[in-house]
Image (cartoon, rainbow, N blue to C red; front, side, top):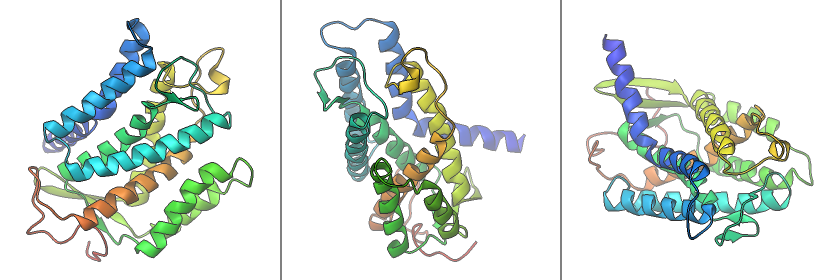
Length: 272
């Protein structure tokens, strides 16, 4: 029963952390099944995302510092979307007033929702990083991962080399988290894989509801290739690093927990 209670607590913390992604999925389903008046569907989705972001900030579910990280990841995702769409990787076939170079602006919020989840889960589960590599190692690795999403279209795809480097660099790194009063820990690489897998599941739901469309889904919907898990795993590292930098710079108390009496949870804690 104790294990079951802990599992429920962990699941509830995860559910609260996923509020933004859940709103996006519900909005995708609702606008797919219900014909929306006045403006195209993509524009409705943008308005819903903006209202959700405003509400989360107004209700103090998100902090201004977290909003900065989310906005940055929104821009990173939007640039990637514009490039990928114009390279023919996928399309947004519906009309919309808020489309730029074939990409609706709401698409950036799908990336931002990932950063929102990371920020929320970090606070609710009181995450601490153990043996996190030095910035001069992580920054070039994160930059290479992001650039490879662009360069593999006209150069070799080095994602598998990058995945190998990720395993080597983060082999001794752990993430410690708290459920109730009990501390747990997990290898950081395993957490990357799990998050990447569940984003792949979410991607299948999103494409089913017409968020975007891969070329092989133009005639009939089919599962997104499982190989996309590796892409999401790599992108998660970029977002995880951005959030970790925020947590390194800002050691402020929150409603869920206080870091005043705790050691820094980013950096070079060598204890287990």
